[in-house]
Length: 517
Image (tube, rainbow, N blue to C red; front, side):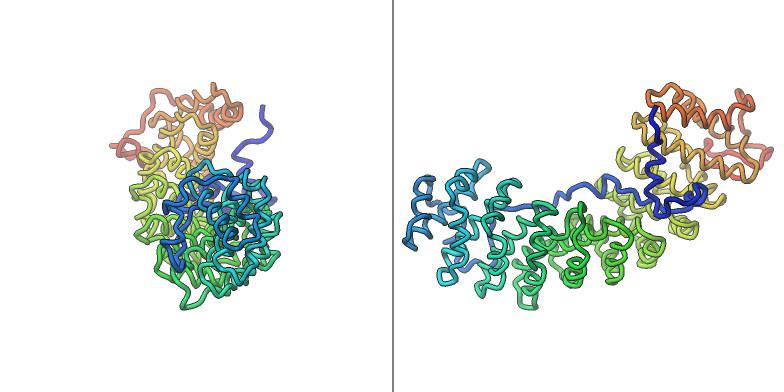
């Protein structure tokens, strides 16, 4: 039998772990769920086959032009290793074109031939800008490969040279360096930190000014977002504090690509402990993030919602700042969104708010979010239902008796009972925890027997009894404990609550969807 209940595992992630268990019921859950871990689909960690916004002659340098059609590795090696500038330029251009075509590109052959060190050497030739640019482009495409490919670029000394190139007076060369550094940063925390240690952040931020072209800013924002990624370890706090003011500046532009990557950057920086969330919140960006949750483009709205979801997983103060910024007026729209992924993230954010104190739970009720939550419990896709179940459990853990009553009156009890048939053991455990919390509320008013009758009327007792045959021992034990504590003292078979008579303070109506003490 497992030694630890999965629900207990989630409880260890409460912000005040170590306190009395009964007090923990009133505290926020900051579980790092799949929603946070999922990689965004709108942008890739690495990119190749690019078209720069600042090319001086885009047609001449486009990777899609028709020549050379027959590129031979042997010819490229010969040209790159020659002492003739014209041949070197021709070889670098042929290499970057070859590395820009399709998926089956000869990266290893280029590396094994020792060409990377030559490309890096060409980066230093300020008096040969065409050669410099072609070499930079070739290295960018190599760095867009696997971690091993990126490693070869770094080990050949490209990082400090690329950082130096950020200051190039030739915008297309500087932008190419931005792109290469973005690919290196996108490889993971190790190379991200290598770049930060080489002072890449101030060098990048120095390129942000009023006359910087929008296309350049798109590439730069994407690179900054890669420098904010990854949690093991998180980016150094010094770098976070350096980059945040510029991210805030970028978040007030109107270009959707810039907004998207800037929002993703904020989502990465807010995906952590309360002290890291606090650094983000203190910039005053919460109001703008809530505004961007209303953005017409999904690529902006999604990371803005993710950022807000992260922030409300922090302290009660962080959550209240988000509420005060108007998030509860935006969430209903997102909970009705046509895309299930948006519904799921919106409910996840709601579940974090529901894990707060009863004051914040009341604000959920006042803004009319509970009927929407129950509707998604019944009709959402399974991943959304999972988050909605957590929202119910959080709500019943910290809510007052009256608030729990209101939740049940909205149909939440019936909805979670219907979900007891799912195969996901963790979801079942969370539902049983919610039902147990409802019983705790009923006990405070001496209405336990009436709640037992209501659950039986809804078919819940039969389903809980069946869970005693569940393959998962923890599910079996949780179901057994619930029945043993609340259903074993009296025989309720054949009894029904008469909705037409005011016999009990606890009564049902509307096909047992509501009750009240």
